[in-house]
Length: 319
Image 1 (cartoon, rainbow, N blue to C red):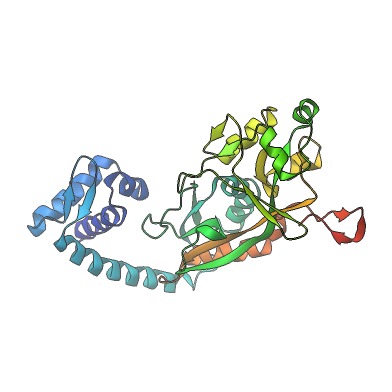
Image 2 (tube, one colour):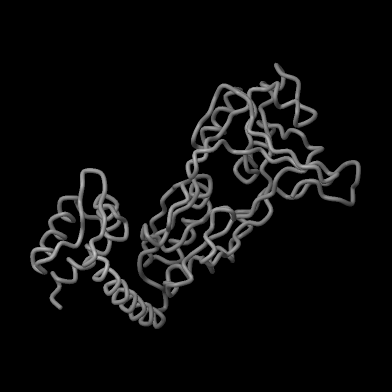
């Protein structure tokens, strides 16, 4: 197989897996026109249409599905061969593509990425921030970082951060104008900054559990709805209302008094964070190195230490 033929075939695979010339071009780092022309040249050389194109969509023809399945098997074998050679290197080499929910993406860059790239200088790291529940395999990512409910069952999940709180918070200035809520029902009298979830379009539920085990789900009342959790934090910090935010994201604000935790008598919802990757593909050496690095540096991603309950010094009321 000549080099040009391999380029044509691998470009076709990228377009077919994404059902998009635009996303394939982004993954391959090529101009959209180049990707389109490359696939057209392959079709002309083979004498068969591989993709159906319209102004809004791309789909694979029957012939394209057959070629895609065969090429995916070939590319998987090539990846396995390259990873076999990688085992003999002192340091892994290659590209690692990750997608993470937005708060985690920013924390990774701030706390993990500098040390990881210093330790593994021959790994090229690409991080995408995306809150949608996308298919990491179809979109060409090696791994994703999500909260547990968003992870497909055929994925291998590696815990990164367990049992962090998601809790209502407000600024002292907001609370100076509005009495702090003493029960979840009191939230209905407040401006709550609401988050529209990108993966299903619903409004995020605020889950609060009382110590007696009773659970209340609250979607909030308020005039402001945003679709990015950082915008929730921005609005809260501008004294616009109460936000429902993960503790690792706001730890510094809580520690320095810029934000005040609310409804502390209620045990806030606890979530877990996982890195997940396909169980159907061999793990690339750069991904293995990243997982090992995270395991060594978990404290850097940990939330605030547990705080003792003044009413019960032997217990922990935080995490």
